Image 1 (cartoon, rainbow, N blue to C red):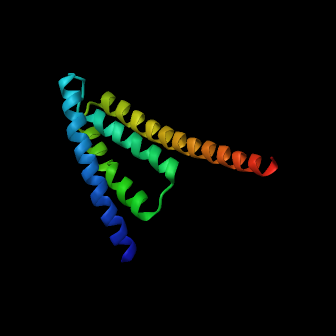
Image 2 (image 1 turned 180 degrees about the horizontal axis):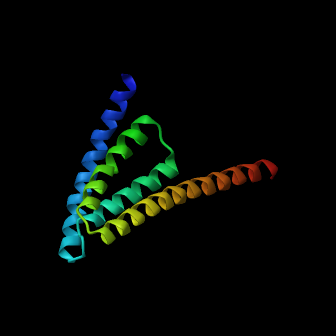
Image 3 (image 1 turned 30 degrees about the vertical axis):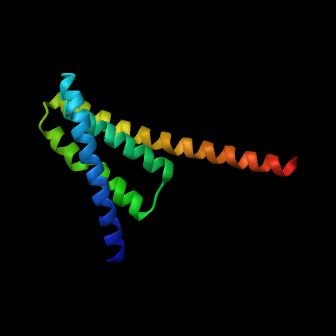
Length: 127
């Protein structure tokens, strides 16, 4: 029960952040008259959330909670169902590939930074 409360508390913050960004970015994409303007904020949010998960590899509150509430599979699924077959195929492909690539990029940046930090510390001991 304690873990569920931790995740739920984090999800509240993540959902509010997603809502705020969706509203702000949605007005920008609509003003720019982008096709399917409503999906672009969600793509960005899901890519950023995936990259942050890869970089920080957080625990319950920040990972499953905040970032789980920040990203949205249900909105992705709803938007996909409302599209034509080709639009849906492109949306699914872009979202899945983009989220995986974002996670891998976040993880690679974290790994690179950890190596640089470790190399710097080793260099100081050898001086």
